[in-house]
Length: 489
Ligand code: BES
Ligand code: MN
Ligand code: ZN
Image (cartoon, rainbow, N blue to C red):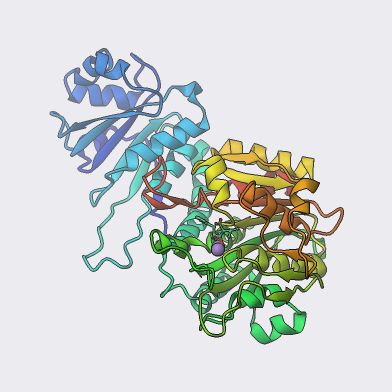
């Protein structure tokens, strides 16, 4: 879906009295009310101040919201009192926005924020939380009113509020792609949706099986042999930076469904493997955000789109495939397919673009979920400055990320009797051996980060800023890293 509109307005006391939707009043400090807050209190005959003096308000932690339905003296259907101390910081402000947006409906929400400094974060949280994936529900879609934000000085908040839509549009594209079932989001459909980015000024190329074969991408192509959906690589270029300057590269695993192939997965939970294209979806989301905010930077996004299915033509355990790099791989387990996809797409990215840095994203291993759970992605890197920049950006965006080790010991586990390497390195340290496998396809001196996002891509419960389902993890963090690391100040 497209993000809801968020508009800014100046304090308007008459509007507070007549607004029929939900009013969310940001309270920074007990006893201190903005002119708008004071007006609400007068209309409630002191009821607001009485609440602020009560244990009910004291119990609110920063970012929490207390809701009063149909408050006497006001026309609104609900008054939400949102406790957000000025020092709470950006992430609590975003959480506040998310919390107050729950229950946003047809009559709209009026956020009375007064102070402009955190308006952008409150707004972003609210807009992100209003995401919904209802394309396959036959019931009439819910109607949503506007989200409006009332501040004392709208001009001061304008820039931050204008920055919301590009980010939210990127996150929503990622979530839509991840939530979409695999009978709808085939490789072809995925590629079609990506060609839609041309409208934003992104150059998009789609390479089919013949071209991939000519390039020698035997590892990537082997994964798709059992599927009727054609294996495709999509290359997206956003050239907003200096003409001819080497780009930064984002590479995504786009397995539209991972049945495991001949090494088939157990039935329980297999339906979740519609999200195995989450890495590619984040790449698409970041490219969208960059293009919409006309980022002054060159970034190329490459995704390997393929479906891993068992079939008479599918690849077998024991098969040996030859990668574009030239290294041969013994496919011990057809369910370790993501690394076969990335091996060739990573190599192509380096050969063609000589990128200044690469970040790859992949729902690569169940082992990373065992190690880090579902709140933190695994970060593997051969370059400390790049890694530090990413971890800082992720921290600022509240996106869980934790550095994991690479090392010779993991590499040794990939030795094959008959080929240059095997595609699995055993159960122990499974996320690390997978990352180490990828590193074999990274040239020496090529700064690189691998993000294993298997745990963070889909959430089983709602979060501060998303309903349950696809999270969009990574879009905001990568957008911020690109902005702080690569764009001129
Ligand atoms: N797509 C899966 C990893 C995954 C698991 C993502 C759970 C999201 C949730 C990947 O292709 C896979 O099957 N990995 C195997 C590797 C093993 C065969 C070495 C795994 O993690 O079990
Ligand atoms: Mn798999
Ligand atoms: Zn997979």
